Amino acid sequence: MITPWTPDRVRSFERFNRMMDDAFGTLEEFRGAWTPSVDIKETPTELTFVAELPGLQEKDVEVTLNGDVLSIRGSRELDTEERKDDYVRIERSYGSFVRSFRLDVPVMPDEIQATFANGLLTVLVPKAETRTPKKIRVSKG
Image (cartoon, rainbow, N blue to C red; front, top):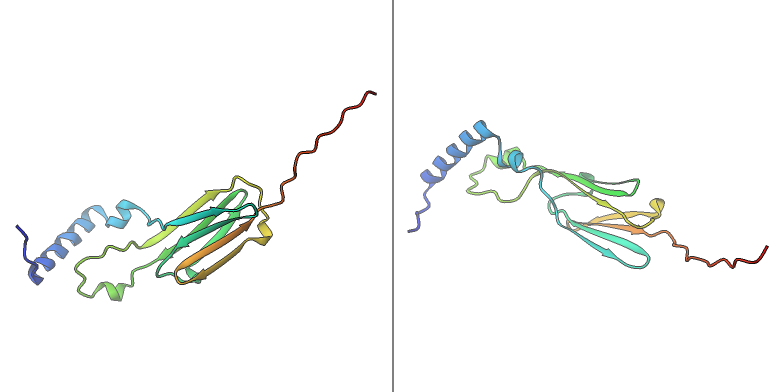
């Protein structure tokens, strides 16, 4: 059986949700921060990280390299004025996030580039030149 949707049912559900949030905290607080998806590509010369960050702008995002850990941080907030509208359901996640990646190859920190366009953050991390091992001939002394 399908329960018919009526404005009264939605209002009752919203009141119940507010009571639960007051008692136990919000779902976001319980579940923790949202986690954006990140694709990672490796070529012989660079690592490329592409993060899906819909609804954010470049000012909302921070990229750092600390030692061998690349971190992407940001925040997406739900406008409180918008929240007053008669939402039936909110499924998108809000709040702050951090994604960190340990780089297992030597990189050139001063040449890392980050660009943001159409909700995608692209971070290009150039690899440092790797030296090929050289065999040293041992001679009689």
